[in-house]
Image 1 (spheres, rainbow, N blue to C red):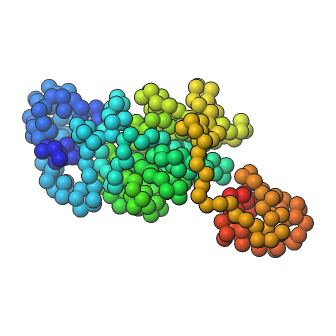
Image 2: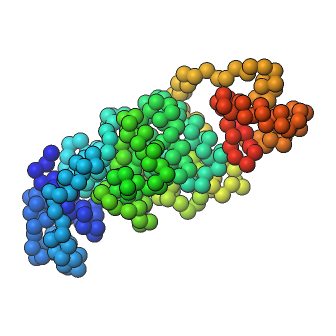
Image 3: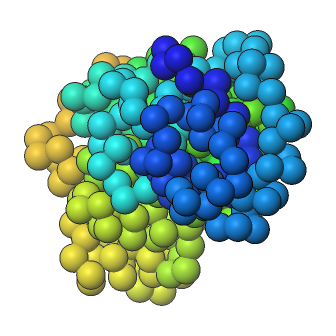
Length: 358
């Protein structure tokens, strides 16, 4: 641990000291204790604006470096500075790497390929299915999946990686203590990420709420930690495209899943493809090899009725009414078969009466 780590942590508790201003302090002072204790003139000489300097001097008296370190220990959080050898090497290469990374869990081997998987919080069943399929294949090949723990595509990517026995990292736009995790409904998912060998990561200190302006900063960390970014489904103006743009600015690969020209959530990926992103329809488009097959064999129908129903399904959602017409049997019987096959994990209900084959 760096001797002056408590002062790095303390300085990040002053909101205006983001990555750029922290870099100025690190260049000017031999250590961060001296930066924390500096006079107004010394801070201004280092490139900190007079108004920011004045505000910091007023707030500094309320910041206790040692107490902050005890708080990190209480929450099981590790702090890494940009000067640490184990700080993620890819992230260190971007224009404005976070001065301090807060981590709960374990960072994987940096030599492993890291791919960001991002997309809409309101993804369609198609977007979620594509995300799950591609992410599961990547995770089975040892790729580390990085996303943002949001609803929709992010949560689907994390879950699929875990289901495949892989490692996934969640980068947050808030603190990573339990109370700060956002959205709160994904706290159980966050716990699974840590318990299966992954980590929660943020540049924001303990107790930081998920403010709207934090998420573009979060997105650049997601892209910065990865060799490439995959966008599965996103609107033309969305945080996912901010992540993709950050990847391009850092000279990283961008992959995009093509979609219908009539689907608003495919406008983002389709436009990325126009701009040069790699069209992606299978994980081989990202890793260059065909993925390993899941260890669990496909479900074998128990009788002719199950066989007939499964044969009518594909990965494109089919509505209950269409199945009733195709099978020519009463709706209650079809409903019963669907429920049974769903329990057997042979099919999945996509919502609103639509079903797909696993």
